[in-house]
Amino acid sequence: MDDVVKIVIAVVVTALVVAFVTAKIAISYHTKLVEAKIGNADEKAREIIDEALKTAEAKKKEALLEAKEESIRTKNELEKEAKDRRAEVQRYEKRVLSKEEAVDRKLESLEKKESKLVLREQEMEKLRREVEDSHAKQVAELEKISGLTSEQAKEYLIKTVEDEVKHETAVLVKEMESRAREEVDKKAKDLVVTAIQKCAADHVAESTISVVQLPNDEMKGRIIGREGRNIRTIETLTGVDLIIDDTPEAVILSSFDPIRREVARIALEKLIVDGRIHPARIEEMVEKAQKEVELMIREEGEAATLEVGVHGIHPELIRLLGKMKFRTSYGQNALKHSIEVAILSGLLAGEIGVDIRTAKRAGLLHDIGKSVDHEMEGTHVQIGVDLCRKYKESPIVINAVEAHHGDVEFQSLIACIVQAADTISAARPGARRETLETYTNRLNQLEDIANGFKGVDKSFAISAGREVRVMVVPDQISDDDMVLLARDLSKKIEDELEYPGQIKVNVIRESRVTDYAK
Image (cartoon, rainbow, N blue to C red; front, side, top):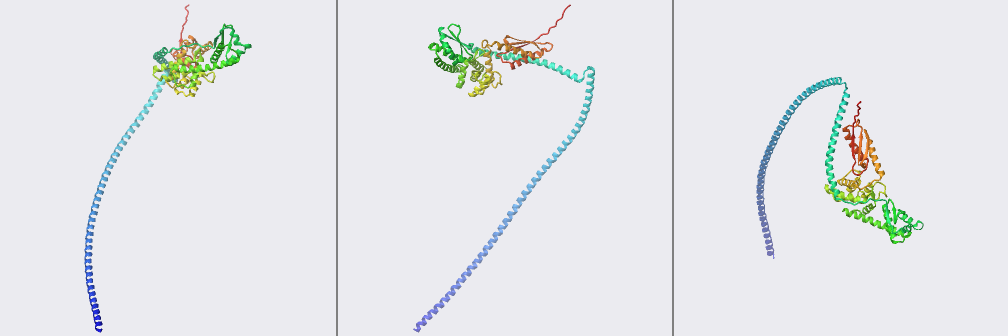
């Protein structure tokens, strides 16, 4: 047992000793390994440090080289820039110097010129004084020789020049008028003759009465009725006077309103045919006649537009055109006159190359105001303008209507054409007639205008007012003054009188010397 224990202890002790030795050996080995590794690490660290130092040194050298190169390059650029600037500054200096030299030269030249101008001004002042002195001496000498002062001589010279200018003006006016008259008259006559040749219109003089034929004289009593009831009814409903006299088988209707007269005529003819004449029947027939006349008015207006070839006119204007069938001016039917003016305007427009349709339209509507001038205030021109504006006619047509009597300025060739066509239609022989009173008044006005001029002795309106002969005082009016007097007189007649066609102004100057042989 003890042996076993001893063996066990011996084994344990041996194991411990072996373990201790083994551990010590292991520790020693491990220590050597660590020392070896540390030694290797130190060597590697030294190598790394050495390599880093070498690399840093190389980088340093490289950076220094680059810095030196950059410095050298910058220095070169700065030196080049400085050199360029110095060269530019030198160029500027040269230019400034040259400019200064040029300015100096100019200044010197100006100073020389100024001195010359001062000397010349002094010379001119001296010469001016000499000329003034000489002029004063010459004027004094001339006044002494002529016996006239300078103001008197000036007035004499002005009067002489005025007489010469007046003479030259008269001659020039006469030449220009004759030349213009030759050229314009020839062209105008060609146009007018051509237009008139192409236009043929029938005209019938209107009157203020109408005659209704009766089948027998017995019908007169039936028209008058018991105690005059029928005739009073007719006159009251129509506004027309019935004249029943000794004229066989005829009744005369009298009225200044042609539409009323036409209504009365139609109604009376219907009553005569019907045979039943009493107040109720009369009222019925008058109403039918009014409708027929209204229809006739519209048909006449439409027929006028178709005849002329004008379309697109407002229906109310067409109706007003139809009413013009029953309107006369100096015995000339207003609708026929408007149709004729429209046709002539179209022909003249075609000759001179302007819009024919617009010219016809303006010609047809130029007297539209006459259809209602007895119903509205104002002239037929102003009424016509208002109607055209109301029914949206073009500005050209409105201006033609407004200017056809010269109330306003012409704004187009069409307005001139319409005025010319209106004059042609009104002035041709047989177109119009005047009352005796109107005729005599126009002649008196013509003579009064002529007598109102200074130097006129007598004047005579002849050829139905188409010519005025003016006798002047020869001591007051010269031959040159005659030309100017004729022109002034014609202008005043144009401004103050209204007349169709033209008026010839004939100025006569006669000098007579009488002596007796004894």
